Amino acid sequence: MFLNEDAPKYLLYGPLLAKAVYSRPWREQGDPSDMWCLHLLLLFALRALVYQLWHSFGNMLFLFRGRRILKAGVDFEQIDREWNWDNFLILQCMVGALFFLLLPTLQGLPMWDARGALLAFALHVTVSEPLFYVVHRALHARPSLFHHYHSLHHSSRVPQSFTAGLGTPLEQAMLCVVMGTPLLGAAIAGLGSVGLIYGYVLWFDFLRCMGHSNVEVFSHRFFEAMPIFKYLIYTPTYHSLHHTEMESNFCLFMPLFDVLGGTHNGRSWELQKEISSGENREAVPEFVFLAHVVDVVSSMHVPFVFRSFSSRPFVTKPYILLLWPGAFVTMLLMWLCSNTFLLTFYTLHGRLHHLWVVPRWGFHYFLPFATEGINDQIEQAILRADRLGVKVLSLAALNKNEALNGGGTLFVDRHPNLRVRVVHGNTLTAAVILNEIPKDVTEVFLTGATSKLGRAIALYLCRKRIRVLMLTLSAERFQKIKKEASLEGRKYLVQVTKYQAGQSCKTWIVGKWISIREQRCAPPGTHFHQFVVPPIINFRRDCTYGKLAAMRLPQNVQGLGMCEYTMDRGIVHACHAGGVVHFHEGWMHHEVGAIDVDRIDIVWQAALKHGLTPV
Image 1 (cartoon, rainbow, N blue to C red):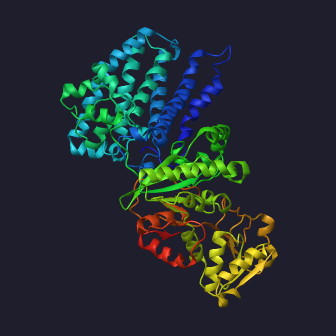
Image 2 (image 1 turned 180 degrees about the vertical axis):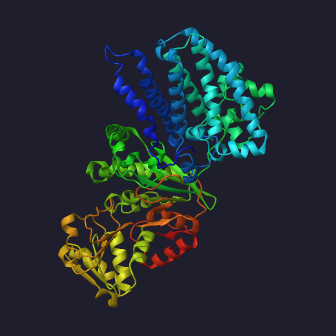
């Protein structure tokens, strides 16, 4: 790559911006020839937008997964490798600025000249296409050339629009020549225009992104009706074959040159027909994690929006806030007419795992009139998974809310013949929290004490002779839990009704959101463990805060390229991990409703056995 990831590379546009602002060519008395600075800056923005839109298009799995060419997922390694994909845009912008300065006649171009467009097209076909083909084929012909100058472009396992920008300086210099020849030729002939520059450059980027999109966009019927176009325009399938086999399909955009050069892959159109007609069926997942959206801002933390954003733990970014209005409108539309959809996927131990999303935001789960619709979405997802042959479906935090559906009990009772096992994952969540507690702790303060998780944690700790201060106003619920404990364990369960009861306890387990006022009741040095969504805010500087219960997936996970909310890379929420363990263990029972305290240690050991590790 040309520039370090952390370098302020966009400052390189500073001189262009400064000249544009200083000369102010938009004024009546301004010099129109100075508009070239603005044109270069605007063209950079539009080109970046083309690449971003194609990326979004190619990663909307809920719409186009049946037309995906390579079925593997885009992992973090590929994302990092392509992080500075737009460096070539900076290079080409600087080259463009150089030509505008060296050739003053370029600064006074008319808006449009049709003759120039025809000449540029002719130069593209007769110069750019064959030049790219010859150089590209030469880079593959010699191992030393390929290794030093082209292997970087082929290092990405799954082509994406951003892959088109991944290359060595030599490759990018070649592209400058290939793209610049038609434009410069038209300008030298006196037929150049501003419209030609915009149109040709954006058309060039559009086709490059299309070829690397990994989604087949053409119907095979188009080529059957007009066979000549098989030689005039390549397809994403055509170029993907070049990336996988690397000994054929070297053309820029026109397969004609592969035919003339004897490097046309005979499978190109057969495979294109197979994918575009839907014959290339998607594999059925064996495990599904059914997630939900937390809030409007975090709804943009998904691969098809900004990959650089979703591939890192969620934090609110200023530029993301600018998109809040659009995200809010999207939320309203999805609330009205959207169903559960596939967001991303990965493979673990060679088994396909999907992440589906219920199109409901966190606040929806607390609206009484919305609960029926949410349960309907969850139920339809479970039935769909059952029809597909999914083995295990795990419910995310709010999707298994006790007040909503009894931790999934509602669906299992309603459909007793389900083949898919419905799992809430709370057993492993409890195990993660319990294994975070230091061995020398003798007392804990527990909020959310009568919830499913709170009950399991309290019953487990009292077996270990750890005193549990259970914060609850309901004496009836407390007594019900206490009766489940052994006679010896009951004396370690204590009901408290105020946060002040925890002012001498430095181990707080938070299962219900607490404010800064309530946090102040904890003594300095307190560590807050938590299983509340959303997580509590870190108000206290003299205390420490644990993240939501989570586990790290094994190293052999493949195709994972999205961080799960605030989790680091490769880490998933414990309820997600609990479903993974349930599936890989082959357990045939549902895990809904109350947590079986006797199974907490069993599930923990199973997680460790399958390579999941505590964070």
